[in-house]
Length: 255
Ligand SMILES: NC(=O)c1ccc[n+]([C@@H]2O[C@H](COP(=O)([O-])OP(=O)(O)OC[C@H]3O[C@@H](n4cnc5c(N)ncnc54)[C@H](OP(=O)(O)O)[C@@H]3O)[C@@H](O)[C@H]2O)c1
Image (tube, rainbow, N blue to C red):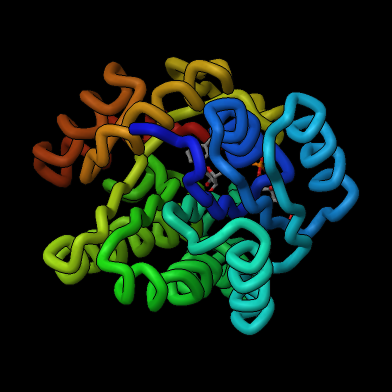
């Protein structure tokens, strides 16, 4: 895939995976729109990209605000042209025992992880359908496949994102739009920093970014990594419930 002159909108681009993808895709020649709330961080990344002759635009917006996301998509198209690839990456995590869950906290997480994804997809989709081309990418999680201890809101949100994107794929592939769902395991980013719980096969950010970029280039429908953890998760999907519960309760990834 030739990234030169491709216009890419990346949400959650101020940090972690989104920032890594933005810098790497700009290095490969794409014009990148960086959407997140922290404007100062976005401007620093734009400067870093422009310093190496790349093209980037800071879009300081909140994914939970649908009109604002439409405005961001409009600004990106006006600056660099129609959006070719959306990477819906913005997300938050939480670790909460079921009995301590608060409705407002669940709603806030679902609002970013699910509604935020819907807001970005709908902001770019019309143009892609009109042109009969484009690619929608979701950064979901291996946590989408089955429930995990202390992760009801997060697992629920990622399962929703994966199912949402799978439905999009069925509708949009015949219209020339590729749909890619990425299911990462544990990656070293601010989201996982400071966690004391076990994080098997924890990956370096650069390695994860390289894998995600390759999956996007190959227009994979679904890509789960690292393979060791992805294999364990797939095995978990085939297990009878009593066996899955027994193993999962003894292997919590949240403190
Ligand atoms: N790290 C992992 O191990 C891992 C594993 C599987 C999946 N993932 C998924 O990968 C994605 C990125 O995670 P990360 O590890 O890179 O985390 P991160 O470093 O904490 O980055 C999260 C990004 O989301 C943005 N964001 C949060 N709320 C937002 C909002 N309301 N509007 C706009 N942007 C918002 C943040 O920017 P602002 O705060 O500036 O708005 C930040 O840029 C998430 O969807 C996460 O669930 C991560």
